[in-house]
Amino acid sequence: MTKNITSQTLQRLPMYLSYLMSLPESRRNGNISATAIAEALGLNDVQVRKDLASVSNGGRPKVGYCTAELISDLGRFLGFDNRDGVVVAGMGNFGRAMLMNKSFADYGFDIVCGFDCDESIVGTEIGGKPVYHISELKGFCERENIRIGIITVPERAAQEVCSEMTEAGIRFILNFAPVHLNAPKGVTIHNENISLTLAMLARYGEQ
Amino acid sequence: MTKNITSQTLQRLPMYLSYLMSLPESRRNGNISATAIAEALGLNDVQVRKDLASVSNGGRPKVGYCTAELISDLGRFLGFDNRDGVVVAGMGNFGRAMLMNKSFADYGFDIVCGFDCDESIVGTEIGGKPVYHISELKGFCERENIRIGIITVPERAAQEVCSEMTEAGIRFILNFAPVHLNAPKGVTIHNENISLTLAMLARYGEQ
Image 1 (tube, each protein chain N blue to C red):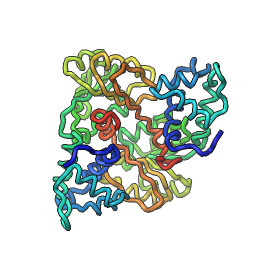
Image 2 (cartoon, rainbow over the protein chains, first blue to last red):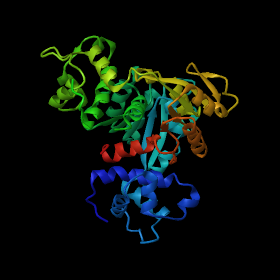
Image 3 (cartoon, each protein chain N blue to C red):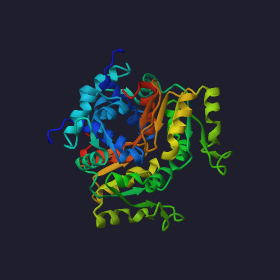
Image 4 (spheres, one colour):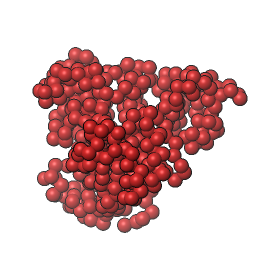
């Protein structure tokens, strides 16, 4: 296994993992060839073989990979057997979806709790996770050493929540609010803009 | 205005538009310089100037761009003054968020209706949009000539919904279900995997 992996390969690895994990259980218990993966994902099979060889040495000629082992190798390489705590601010539809999304765990994330200012939700559980008052966000993140936050609050509240998160030590923010957020150097923000994703898909074929 | 735009520029244009649209109204009514945009987005200002010149001829030395005009130029170039009908299958948290998301309209999309199999939701409205029974999806999309669909149904139902959509003439699918979907040639599917987005953000700085 080589460690000098290209960023192109790195971009494809989650695609392989995502595909393998989406297979029905019966197929996850068997073997799979690089050719089959290449066909399913519309990629060149030489490329797929090369990519997989850089993270797993489980491939055998004419047999392929043991699917479960390949999933585990890809996951380990991508750091998905970490356990990173994540908090979610804003318990609207997106926020609720985040707390109820079981697939975060597969990727090594532990959605710890949600925050909101609506007293009728504070104190309840969503998807088995507690919802605290937004005023507790900063203290909680500091105490629990949380590094990752998801912002799903309305536009007008997003910057304030972002500032509280970064003051509390959060370094990575996934932002669903349709607003540009300012954060100190060293904080990485990804703006999740579904409308834009749809536009790029339907107008430019994701160019 | 040149038409031979590079794909790198094309990838940045929505970022400019998204940033400009996220500015407070007071700033959207004024002027903005390429330098200010570059600074806000952490880009090189020569690059920003070049990118903007390819879609708008409204930039003036020492004045910059009229923000509203630049928004309109970018939007027109990106095709956001289209009116493309979109349907959403699955009225869980993500589906509800899609029907209630007002920003689709800014990008030229008209979320027409939602579909679900839960009789207690069918016949109601979410975000002002009607919810029909999933059995009506195929007929509706054929009749209304819908080309774009969003899938937010559970994993086990996703492939069936995908097949019905494509049989009805849908050509672009945004898929939130954590499963690989098979579709005929000519159909483009984008898998929206929030866990993966978070993993790439928090582990690789979106490399």
